[in-house]
Length: 63
Picture 1 (cartoon, rainbow, N blue to C red):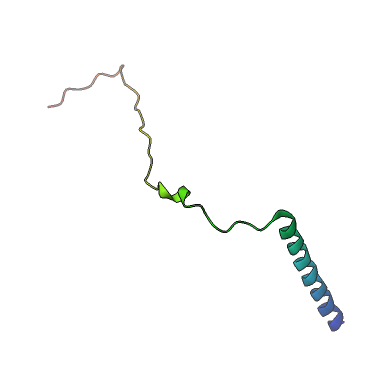
Picture 2 (tube, rainbow, N blue to C red):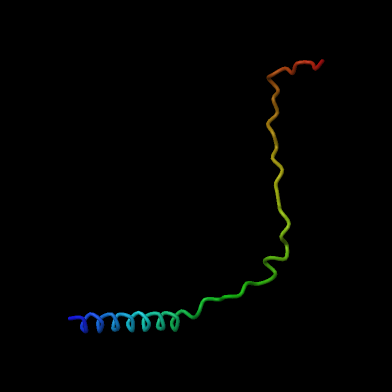
């Protein structure tokens, strides 16, 4: 029984390796490099937030 379990594990491992190799063969390998142009402009970009005007309320004079 111990030998049978070991045999099943080995068959499972081989099956997973074959499926992985077939998947890479069909779809192609994933790219591992990034383009430098994407990272050249790294300065933060922010947008100005406009505040609503309050016309109804009167402002108190400052002393």
